Image 1 (tube, rainbow, N blue to C red):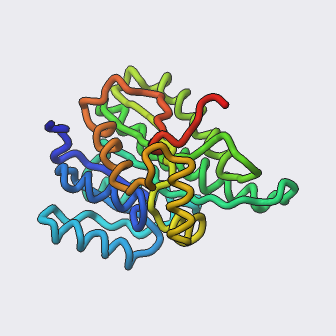
Image 2 (cartoon, one colour):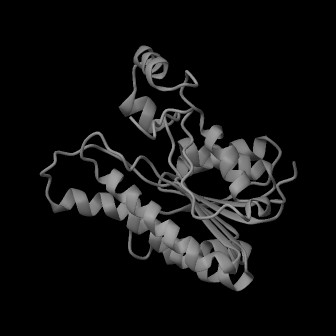
Length: 252
């Protein structure tokens, strides 16, 4: 299937590792004019080297942290100077950690800034040009909004889901779609190093909780993201699509 992505400018944040990295490689293979953004430049260079070694155009590297107040404009300016506009935005930067229920404001401010405000502000920096060209695809990598404990990211991701649905209604007639993808257990830096570092425990968790029987790979997310980024996905808007091998249970 031709996804009609050849030559379309795309930006992926959080592109140095995990889902962002895997998605970047798939979008490059589909022919996008790609920009990759993250804090760790050396890892972005690795991604760019891998993409180039596979015979695809070397992506534009935007070495920026998405958190500072001026980050959205700095990222937008570098992107527009290189490509003129942006058709596709993949908001993959984020982080998650559990906190005590009575944690103070600093942790909440930090977590909401990274997992909600940074996504909202970068999207707003790019969406006006999407409206002018009557085309845009915004894909947010989110997470569970049904927490088993207190986690700032859960609250922030729930906010992203609600905000994205509202944006889909506001922008749908401008040819813009905005969808959210909560990943299940995808093999990423966070999963391997912090959440499930023990391979035997990973296997036991998958056997007990994931109908597919294994943890997913970043490409399992990236393939869906590429489709949602394409003109073919024009009628999928405002959705929350779980990519988790069947792990989430809708009723208990």
